Length: 385
Picture 1 (cartoon, rainbow, N blue to C red):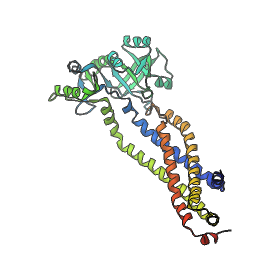
Picture 2: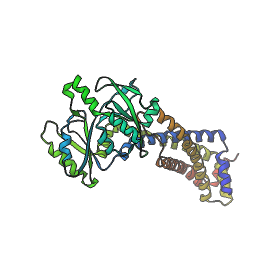
Picture 3: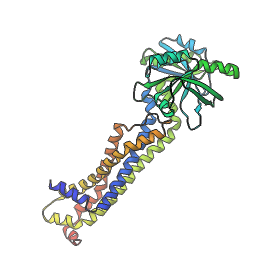
């Protein structure tokens, strides 16, 4: 109890300095937590990937199309349970800043292959019956204030022009990591329009999604699919949904590495701040430590005082930073909902915050404690007063 009282009194003997140090640690922990949340959110799509789904695309590049006729041949491959297809549409709503993922898909098979997209049965039926109908994630609907039956016009980029749709349904994610900011519409609607405006692009698909019977045979099925179209005009590259998502994210790997480096720099900054505080504190209390030695206190109690004070300050700053992280992360997620559909602070991030703060508190106290322990009583008493 005496040690605890001494720790608290020592930590707040210079209130302004301690307060500023705690505030600096809190800001650094907040920044560190946000950066780690960005990284975990970035890879959230990989976690949401199914082990029983394959992605088939053009072997040259994702931007090159595939013939629609491929779906029938793929369906005959041993181990394949279902095949669906679609195109990345790449349109925006009213203004280019209102960008979100939108796809032209074969609706019935696509929704069957993605059971994590939960829809009301009545809305699903309405969507399937309306060729111009579309389905949007609940977060997207809430963002723009759309209502069922409302007309929605998207501005095309890959497929230029104004595209008119009718909102026939919404979906919610079965799991927390399901993207609820996407929009889907009938591939037939896109294809029929292409027949009128760009006949050369009619009948083209951007990708095929393949359901397999067992995850263990996914590699074998992928190899069988690619072998069918080897040496054709449009060779395929088939990979698991997880591998496809990872390869897509790898395009921005440099950004992720930069974020990781910055998060480490934040920790170094915290260390410098706390180490400076503890060094100043130790110099000021050299005489006190000398007095403790004359009273018979050894290296252990003195080290406990210094390490305890350092840990108390860093953990208070850590707690304050974690408290601030949640509202700031919520505001950040809302502001960038088009890029981060799910932006929540994970429990793992909080553990990393606490571990980083504890590590900084320990390292920052090592040199001051060593100096206080090794100082001679006579040298320490010279500084009294």
